[in-house]
Length: 151
Image (cartoon, rainbow, N blue to C red):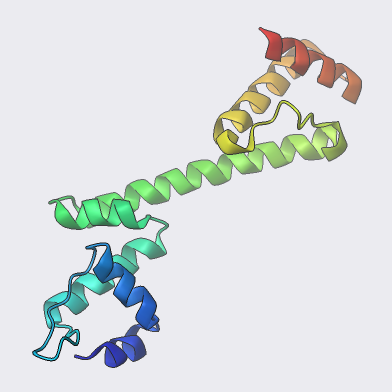
């Protein structure tokens, strides 16, 4: 099967298919003129890649999965579990933001590169504070969080 046929079948661009070949993710045999010729095996591998990508698995992880004997279903289940955990953390943070107000969050101590740890930290600090007091003000919450941050 030619590259243009694979493009029509999958909706992928020629550049994407070439990139998968370049990084060794999907090495496709070539004909005598140097054109890629997709075999049934390479098409199956391509659909495996697309399946894993659909679940948010990055290309380097996909390459590891394909090169090993890792169970694809188990890999996807683990990725789905992690995605659910992240969504739950985001939902918890949104609940806190709704309670204390977006303006009250101190983004100077918030590290966007490590958002999951930060979310856990905010949830922990607010939860700990709320156990100690009821009817708190935004200022009291901010002071408590800053005090906890210094510990």
